[in-house]
Length: 448
Image (cartoon, rainbow, N blue to C red; front, side):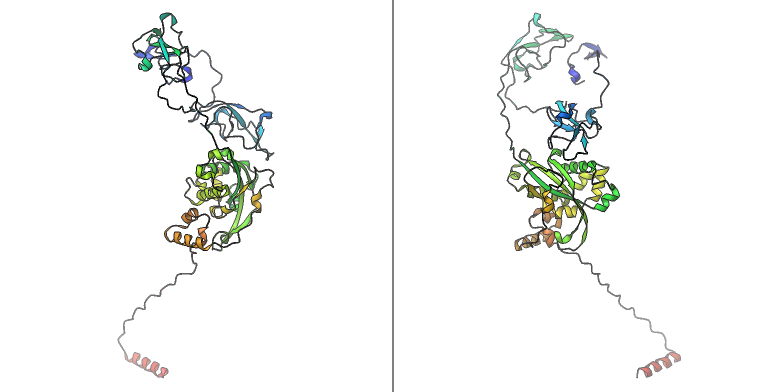
């Protein structure tokens, strides 16, 4: 159909239904059929032995059907994709969670969908080609190049002229091959490729801790009391952070630790006085220089992550963190229902840069970051007031993160709107009677 399984689309070895066809007989099978490949294709995988289990942060992808996977990389089974086994449990990963086993695989062959990009060249023709003589004609099934400008041609390879490229003749008819005469040529001297310079990357690495906050009561109601110890909850949150562009890839989410529930209030990041229960998921991230934009390299990394987190909560990030959780369904949807975007964005200033990757469970420096006591500056007051005059609070918070423009947002009043009493309706004057005149006279006398 499409050169699959090493077949030749131009074999034309049989006449079938009135036209040349490329027909093959199955001689042997590799065994029982495997799972149906995903749309992205599956790489060749092998499970790690126990003594090969990786250190923290070395598993590149937490799904083994990613098109970016290539030989030497490690992946973790997510949903038995690509014939992986979700119950393999061959490694303890990450190492700090001794009760957690993971299903880790090594990539030993590229995905069928993976094709390295080649640099364009002016000419890909071999330096010298010559037509085959009759006694050099190849055996059936041995010609692998059906164009003579194939960049992979080497000395002594045979190619077939496709459209007269590289000085070949489409009417040479040098050999009877695949049921008909074909124009086959031998590579005498191959095309000389200039070595492609190896790309250079920024090898710097930074480590940052931040917080994603949730309503603890909602977590109890939707997920149950084991949400603190559930590794599945942490996996869903980590994947959503990648989809919402807070982290660059799943391997960059090094650790998630639930903090103690506390009471947060609007006066921590605005002038309102509401308060509510909130629990932080403290997230340790790794930032790699090769994944950052040039302007992000020089930016303070704590500020960079805080800005990403605010954008994922209150915009303009797309998808939002809530949407990235919801789209995963199941536990992800429960986390979305419990997400406290207001406190997450408002307390993003607590994000800190640390000296190295996280260690033991009690090694989370973000726990010691004090709440700020200083008041906003006059410059920020002017900046935020001007912004809020024309734009929404959410826009100004993201546009000027250093100023916390939510502090200058107008506070909605709870005083009831006065109700204007209706104007009195004049009554029709009744026709006077003798009795009415007597009563009116008594009233006048009483008034006197």
